[in-house]
Length: 396
Image (cartoon, rainbow, N blue to C red; front, top):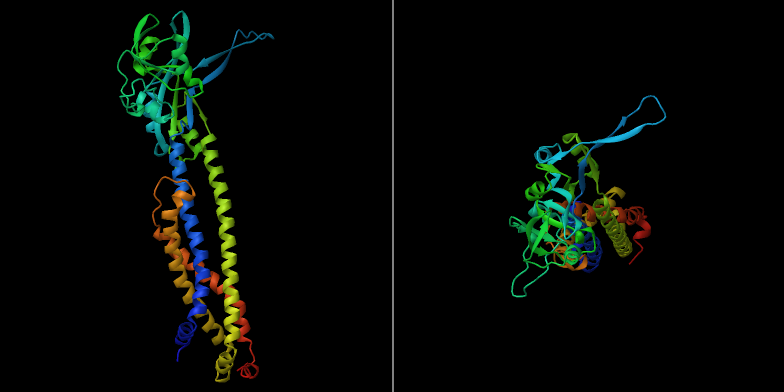
């Protein structure tokens, strides 16, 4: 009879004990697989959400200091030669070496206009890109019978503006009324809900109309860029943008990326600690079960040794047994862990996206299960191989 057949028969004769051993491995593997699936989904969703949390970097005109009136005296005046951003710079971003990371390009022109005998800041924007980049900006609902318009799909009519909540209060205007901006009439299309930031005090208009109003055709004050933060090397993006726009200065807003890394890092530490604890418990279950099994099979091992089985044969039988159990446990652990992540993960980690079954984790799950079983069973296998045949045969 082959060693493999002997190992298989031993498993069939001790079903309850082997099922108990298998249960420990399944729980350990399932915990690790479910954690890995939830972590991947959490990282993906966090990246998607951060893509909506505004710009990752801001492009401003470059300013360079210049000395004037310097006649080898102690008095030196310094002025700044400020480069300009224009509409022609936008295609350069799309053609840059980091274009694959770019999600939204939102150009804007900022200036001051006279209205109601006071100066007010107006911002010319591409409405769809601006409000897609800043989804927290929403319009006040003026008529309860109408649905609130989604700003990311908004085509702002010509000669129309949107006011921040503070700007609307200061100017004392309502939706549909006309206001004068530098003696030109604009209709108030909507008023934004209060967000507690500088946006509340601004007036928003179509970029081309604001350029005309401020007499700055084709000019831009800044360009805000959002990157796909599931895979966004912020520093690399900054370098790539500066190479494409030598007349600009690019500033990275690292808060979103740092928030993402910190959140996922904390969850990872918790998950790894939990998985390690469960695997340790599983290892103890396997060790205790195998030691108990060796004790029960002392006479059987003695017979094998008496009829010519070597120590290596005894160890091989035990490793084949735990290897088979490890393979089955790994497959079942993968299935249970994947299903637990799919159906329980969204509630456990507050994830809105679906968590698919990742078949690529099947092999790692099996290897983890088999490896853990063999490592923990090494001591019982050595102990069994070292049994003296004469002493072992005394057991009834």
